[in-house]
Image 1 (tube, rainbow, N blue to C red):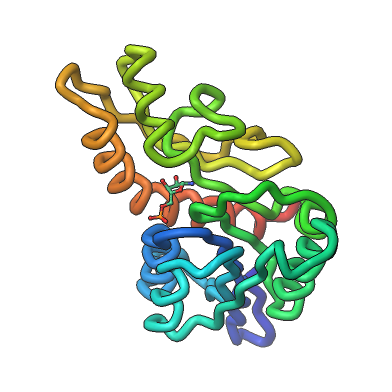
Image 2: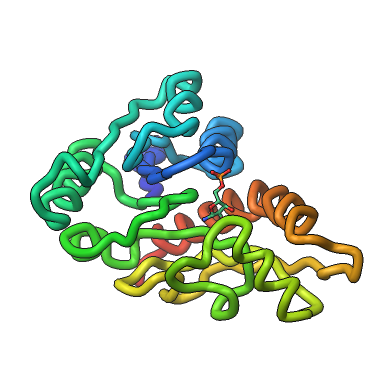
Length: 210
Ligand code: GRF
């Protein structure tokens, strides 16, 4: 994405679109990482949510354009997904980042952004993922299974829940004293450093010639 013309370096900005349904702390961390160039040469073009949620307040504070697309306002799921796709395209988004987005996305968004949608999951996929595996439930399942490690996974989104190729994982030990609450808090912290790193690496790969 860098070019030079008669000695003048030109740096192209990649526009990111974030989709969230809740608190939005990962969204805010991504926005900070863009501002600090931890994620270099990028800009968050917009936040899209499917409901009223605290992530919208964060976007307001960060001066990032935000849009709410409620499925109930559309006759068909495909129309809802189409409206989100149009919004992202209108904002020149090239990479879509799910940050606590709780709905399954199908065509036409997947077709428009093939290999260009990432999701963050608070466990080590392929374990502890799939339909209904979100929030505290993930950490309850990890503790109940008695595994020694958990962590964070960032993966490419495809048609199945928590399924596409893994692009980044970070691990932490599950201590015998951990509860779902303590594990959730530790993993949430880890997400805030892991997601910006994973996005920076993915953008670098996107910029490299195939
Ligand atoms: C995170 O735990 C993420 O892994 C999951 O949803 C949660 C979102 O947290 N997909 P926040 O809204 O960014 O605080």
